[in-house]
Each structure stands twice: as structure tokens, then as C-alpha cells.
Image 1 (cartoon, one colour):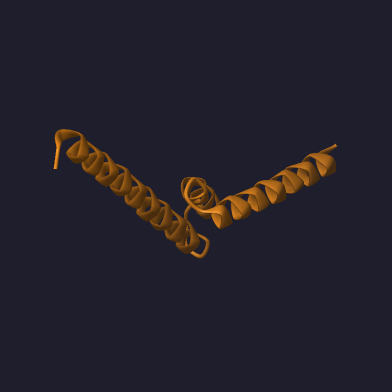
Image 2 (image 1 turned 180 degrees about the horizontal axis):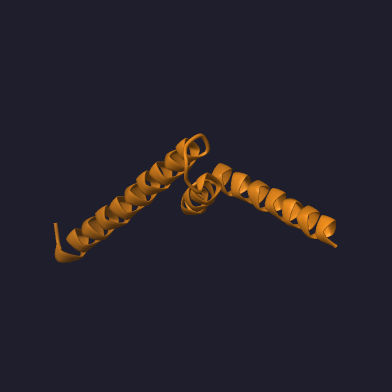
Length: 84
């Protein structure tokens, strides 16, 4: 195994480690957000952050994040509309 092969192996290992850390952190924040929905804390904010992290790796997380964004915009518009 040459130096270039070792470099490729190390680079791949670093990439996979970073990906695993992102996935784990995303799920931990997402689960914490779900817990915060029934306990004191910013549950929806944590869920959005967790989904934002996971959306870089999973398409389903991106779809959920977009759905939450749309609902947030609808809620904002409803609140602004009723305040006028």
C-alpha cells in the first residue's frame, strides 16, 4: 500500500467520521426538540435545527424541514394579518 492509498483511506475515514457525527448530533437535537414539546424549552426551534443538520444527509429530513418552514410562514402571515 503506497502513500497515496493511505491518504485515500485516511481521507475516506475522516469523511465517514464527520458524516456519522453530523447524523448523531442531528438526531440528538431532533429528539431533544421532541422532548421539549412536552417539557419547558424551545422544542420547535430544536426540531428545526436538528432537521437542518439531518437535511444535509437525508432527503426526508429536508422535506420535513421545508414543511415546517411553510407552516411557520403561514402562521406568521396569520398573526400579521390578524394584528392589522
